[in-house]
Length: 328
Image (cartoon, rainbow, N blue to C red; front, side, top):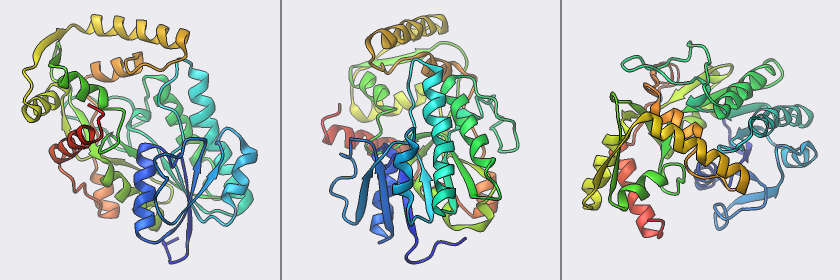
């Protein structure tokens, strides 16, 4: 199925970081776009040409009305933090099943599932993951995203399913990486002791580019694609931010055992308070893994996709946006 004039798209999780960027791009192209949100619609308000509907992927009854007349679904709705494994599975995995069932019931054809590198698990230095490698998630979020992929691909033959697995995403409006910017802004440079631990990053605009290709290209059906631009260690990212902000940052060595202990305590506090703190076991495992890197050779070979935004530019644009909007 190729994207054609008049084709109607639904974005689940449209009020999220990537969802809102995708909605803006589709609206700018004058595509027919419907946005599924729960209650908060602040990120998509003011974008001309969008149809906004309320619904929740864990509520199947709310999905069928949202999917009436839809051709392509960009499925981004999900949670990234929770103190309970069951909640990850209920929203990220079973929510995907509900979307697939609603698509079949309403005649929608193509599902672009926005997955995550976390579904594949960490890599090792100098050996980035490839799509042919087995899924080996190491924490609950990754488990739920891996299960979401398995569920989505189980509908092959009834739906045109394709998956994008972005690495760590940067860009204006991102909250996941904001704590690192705040730490540097406060004059601290966290130094995780041990070897260099590279992490793949990608700009949100490049993620949107690949999402659109997956919606358009027949070669994408039945396939998963990594999405990344370049790799940096946490310390290398901090050094760039220190240079741009001009702060006098104090180096803070952190042994891995200390980070694990702080993360465990933060998870307990999150569960007791009901507030999801930025630090958690998931983030600690990510930071302490030998590497989180992936190859984009498949996306380049099959779809002709290449990241366009240098990571240094993405970091700088994120920093400027945070400062302009009072987030730092």
